[in-house]
Image (cartoon, rainbow, N blue to C red; front, side, top):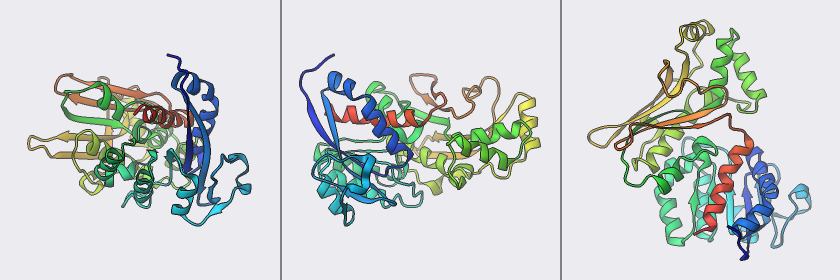
Length: 335
């Protein structure tokens, strides 16, 4: 539906690596659609990274030439100068405490900005507090890109699945481990698998969080916190990574039609507690994840009223991750 009512939003980027830059490109590419369909106009007033510092202005800035933008003295001054209506937070994951991202998100909400993150850790450690703050401020706190890139997980339950009870879920949550295991299936080494994942852009220079299962654990805990409403911490999850696996075992599993995946599982127990694990498992022909290959990700929910519901994000890339943040931006403006 077309609209003739427009509102201009001041936008700030806290973290401006690959994901942040992809969001900025998508905003440009979708500008006409955002204006015509949703009445959204936007301008960037702040961008911050460890390398460039705290760049902000009271007026719109040109992010292609950040050296010409005045650098502020720390986060609070940056936030006060940028005065964002919407803040995108894509800083590095801290799986131990979620800091400093948790404090950044609190301050953003307190300053009256719709606050959108791709960072899992604040959801794990501070979701209840951040959500309560957003409600009190009448602002949106959204995070769809944290688990399955652009595929709906949190919004699916928030908007379209009222009245269901989740009995458990399982998932293939990490692209890097998929690529490594498939490289090993082809007879190559673990190290070659890591290199392949890095060349595809899905693995960091240090892939420890991926191969040791920490990325998947954080996603389990985020889903448990929001959808199951259970405060599950990383230390509560049984963890086994893929680093110790050898190509011969992986090849043999593929040959017998039961390949390995790094699977995440959570089960709601009779007393309401949650038991969870991340570990390599073999999957069979009837498994919902048998066709999840390459960089694809998936989650399968067991529900009381629906026997099973599987969501697959097919070969997500930077643009699809960025779309998750863009969708949150659009939904935030509807409040």
